[in-house]
Image (cartoon, rainbow, N blue to C red):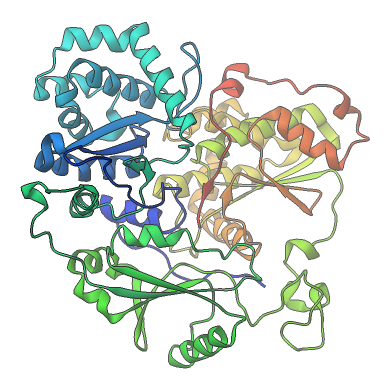
Length: 541
């Protein structure tokens, strides 16, 4: 049986938000530093980012002072991740990011030496890269007229197409993906980490800046997981933790090994509420790494001789696993016969002609999926019953969602619409309308468009709406669903889709005898349906 720990992030600083995402599920570039080819040759750091991505911003800001220290001994190249040709350029964070990418590439072409100064200026407010570039051009001493001509014309678009192609060629899908001297980079992400890595790559005499760099203290870590758990692979966390602890030395231990069971038992004895895997244990030497410890401290709790990194694990290795035909907990009941498996996906009853959608209301993938789901509902009519649920954590008084308090509020309103306007899926009109501009706080126009009484929604919001949302969050957690969007077809099969045609195909694979499977679904709002959002998901872990 899978469950979640009660841990939730309490920090609000920009650095801590970045660190939280780095530790708990954001795709980052990996691997080791290469070596400069010849004596005297500069180190080359290649970075593939998205201009509004906070993790890309983090490493750009960290590399900038290192470039100043090393000068022409460090060659920094920045390219961008996205898709499309000159007429259809798209990036994860929308058109504003595309504009920001183009402007930064134009600066790279027009005034390469000032590129990092310009980018770090924009990074003070990365969500405004499409509008703050003029002020930053002035600050960096870049000709605004030339920059405007490049960024507004075909030249800028061509630069971005070429940049996207380079990212694709190098297999760069996550921001940031980095290479040092041609080899993937997995080192730390603070300025001193980049300086150490660059200095280590120099053949022969090293620049003055490379002398007397403090070596980070050795910190031993145990990654305790369970190979029986499909969602418990935490090996990818190793390079991410190294971004804060440069001297990290990791040992991976499986619960099913004698060593693993002994360690688990000791930890549970020392801390009775220690129950769920996976987890990461750091030895007390972590306190000697002042910067790393300061960044991680709010995510640590002491257990005996260790500091546990609270990963919000879901897997109880002592409980019944519901689909392996073994009596794991020794109570004489196997898989779905065990009460502990009552909510497990593999034990749910089949529900023909149904779809369930689990989302976060301000997740761009979830928003796209809700627009698609509304079109599919209209297409199938009475041959489809759709129910929408929301993903997050906390009880009625501590509700939290990935995109902040505004998302929690909108989750509540959309849930209230579901509760009060369920007949003929009327509530989906509101959800689809809100999903066209999910971060817009003005919700009442969409209620009016959907034919709903805004007073009813507000009364629910002020009343039992938050309790209903807590129940939804609990349901998603019990089912182990943390990715937005996640669809469940006929109560049993889980899949992801963000486009109406793909959603229709998935639904019809389980309900192929329906007449509506023989005709193509049409979008109620072609412009909204066609808005470019790459396939993907917002994930809680």
